[in-house]
Length: 354
Image (cartoon, rainbow, N blue to C red; front, side, top):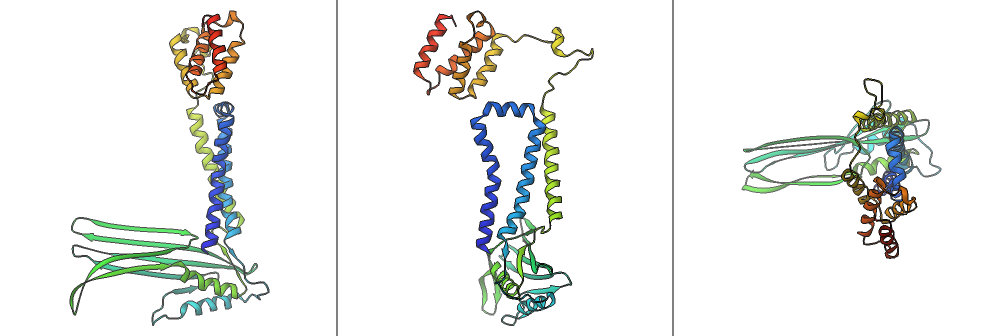
């Protein structure tokens, strides 16, 4: 069980990480194109992320079908469902040292095997109780001779002292292997007076899992992970999750995106109403392009400079001259610049008085 869970976890982790890693790689190679795509296609981006969420959630269940499967030995003749339940009841109904460790309950369509334990402790000024309950639910599919299993866990703990009161309760449904021990020093009063005892609460999932696996497989049935085992359950969950992500992201992106051409009360766009538009001054232009250059690589800055150097001299003035100056200063300040190109750049700037 532990080995299969480990393979399942690594595979699912790889699928979850693949998308973000590919995006980071693509952003490193095609940063400008991706930035423009994000700015212009917010709905498409939301749809892509939603589809990836659908894919990841769907693969969670597909990996369950690959790794959380325990088939019987070839040639083993499957027994009836009633016989299977009877064997399970015999396996878990036997007392150990005079105590029944497991509670077995069956109905027409499932069997429920429960282990639970708790310890109470007293520590002078405080005391409490800690408990665990582990349940495996087995649902047979007679047509396939498979038994679907899920694990339900419940933990509770409370502690009371003069200064505080603490209480916790957790519940989850999962497929897991667990080895756990909790120890609590406790003051006990007995025939020999006061003594300190260590109360232990120990659980090993193999003690619950191994008898189930042995009985089911020897009976000719297979064991399979039972987290949403049927197609309609999975498609409903994955589609709903992807749709919620799409609506949330598209709403956020559309809300943050500035309108490209907001109309005024007179029906004119801001670009056609010169009274509402102000030409940015030189300082504003420098600040904007300094920020842009700070986020660009050295080769990207060089590309922008080379583009400006190809502009005819009569047009390389005004705002274009400011932009050229900003990129030139940014490039010359880089430690990884090409010194030969830097010399050409300085000569070009001197000749054109930039």
